[in-house]
Image (cartoon, rainbow, N blue to C red; front, side):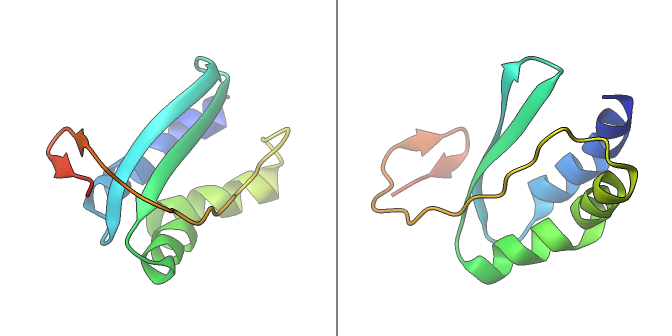
Length: 92
């Protein structure tokens, strides 16, 4: 858990500045212990650039090398429609 949280702040800062990220929110099944991020992106290239590069890419490589995740999952869904507002962002 400590290794995850050590990498989290730089990845979160990079996500806030990431090109093409429309929405990102952290989710926790058991707060502090089982974390996930849900995000909406303009396109696949923008998502891949963030996920595999910079602070997030470094965190992923560290996680695989050190084996500090008991499980991980990266899933892509086809967005059918967006509507509404998220603080500071119009979603459709």
